[in-house]
Image 1 (spheres, rainbow, N blue to C red):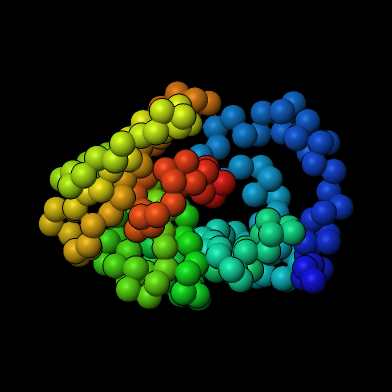
Image 2: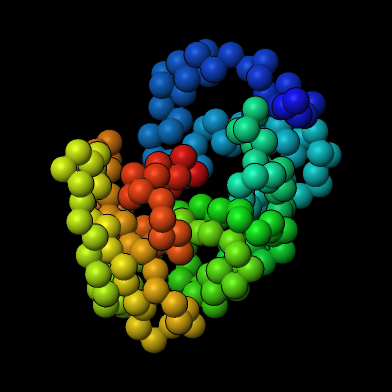
Length: 204
C-alpha cells in the first residue's frame, strides 16, 4: 500500500493548471536558476506547517531519493535542512541522513570531492553538474547508440586530476534545448543509460 503523508494530501489540492498560468502571466520563473516558483511555494508551505522560525535564513533543498527517501506521491523530500543564510550548501548537506543506494542530485556542485568520496564509500550515488574548469583525463569514451536521445552529446569514463576523489567517474554531456547550452554532469553510477543520468539531473 502506498503511504500518503498529510502534507502530500495538502499539496495535491493545489490546482497546478491555475498555478502554471499565473507563473506564465507574472513571468516569475523568467530569471530563476534552479529554484522555481513551484519549489518556492512548496518550500514556504512546508516551513509554515512545520512552524519554522528561520524561513528567512535560507532553505537548503538538498534531497536524496532511492527506495525510501522520496515521497513519490507529492514529489517532496522527506528531509529538509534549514540553516542560516551564511551556511554554504556543501556544509549544510553534511547532516543529510543517507541510506545505502540513495541518489543525490545537485546543480552547480561546489567541487567538494572529499564529500563525493564519502558518499561513494557509503554506497550512495550522485548525479551532479560540474564546473567548467574541472581537471580530468578521459579514460574511455563510450559509443553512443544510433537510436540514442539526440540531446546526449558524450558519455565517457574519466579520472580527476589533483582531487580527493581517487576513483573513476562517468561524465555525461547533455544539450539543453530550452536554454541553448551544454550541461556537463558527473556521476559514480556506471550502469544506467546516459539518458537516465540526464533525466535524473533534469528532474532535480
